[in-house]
Length: 95
Image 1 (cartoon, rainbow, N blue to C red):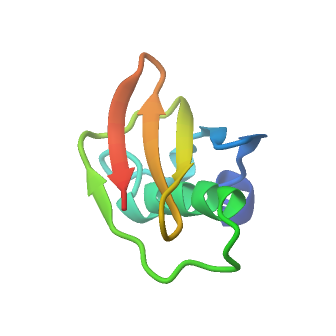
Image 2: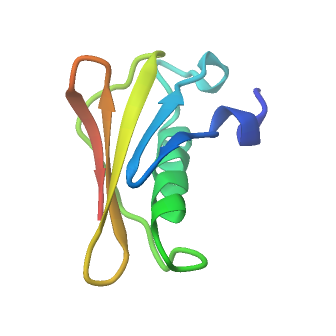
Image 3: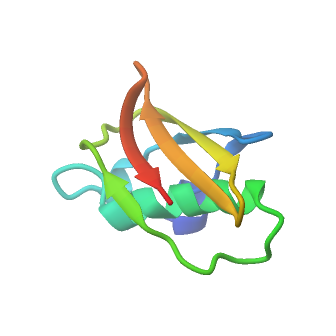
């Protein structure tokens, strides 16, 4: 296992973040919980709330171990997010 804090670290600002998806969290691809943690970090960095009330993730494809772009947007209640892999392939969406 890797260093969870380091492996979920994001760079960026203003709702647009990048992450290096680490092979330390591999099963057949990256663990779903690890991918969800990346989304949650982006939402937390973007939101004005101290912590989330809930997180629901819809995985739309299997991620690969590369740089991912995470976009967080503000809604009426909090933040939503989406993860793209290099090549603009949508991998996950949160509500």
